[in-house]
Length: 315
View 1 (cartoon, rainbow, N blue to C red):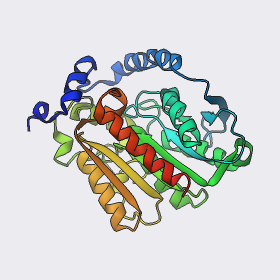
View 2 (view 1 turned 30 degrees about the horizontal axis):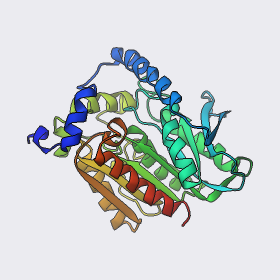
View 3 (view 1 turned 90 degrees about the vertical axis):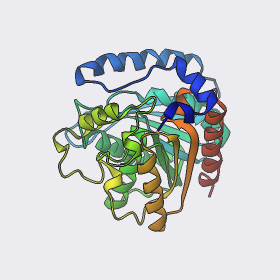
View 4 (view 1 turned 90 degrees about the horizontal axis):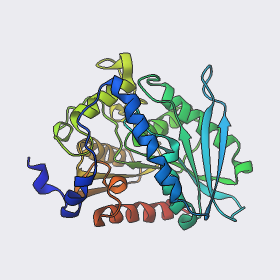
């Protein structure tokens, strides 16, 4: 397949200024993290005064460190509001909850909602289940302290992008099976959910996140579980029983290596009776909405997400 000829023209041009990743080794991870963290200064400089941000440190999983949360609230809004609990992307090996400050700088005022971003531990230092249990611990604290935080628990949902979308899908399964925290929705942006990499699209040499990078990310996250009995909470595509999960929106570019696994997951959610909306964007590679924000395709994808969120946050 000639990927370049299928790229959206605006995307193709914008990609010229975006660094590509074609695999990595674990000894390269610290430098990758430093590069991503250096980008946070640019994000912070773009934030408005329309959102109040409060940082919390909450109890982590048993025997594990505390978990950092950042709560974003539209300025001046005091009443109980719907909320989105969010996990950042980064292939399970890099990234920070501060990466999503700009996302909530827009969403919180526009949707009149609260956003909560969680700082989960990263692989390979902390493989599964550590990052997922961090996310669960943070969500449990948010649910328990909803009244203090001004959150309407009837409209509390979760979401994430890429590896964060994979964590969100796993978290939806985990919360369903533990039965303590009701969730209203799950927003899965090109989620990383299948470690087996047996689909056609998982072998495509595509921009941004190649098969080699994907394999390295999964190896870091799964650790000793690679090639063995991988739990459904680590790789949600392995789950067979999907009934009882919250309604979902799944978005993915047509030139994303995750295309097949994401379409299949949306289809199986629908078959299980879970209200599910799927958007596939022709000409879009992995991460296009965030990494190439000025393109028309990115703007359309973000508008679709916001339209769906506006509905589920008030449904």
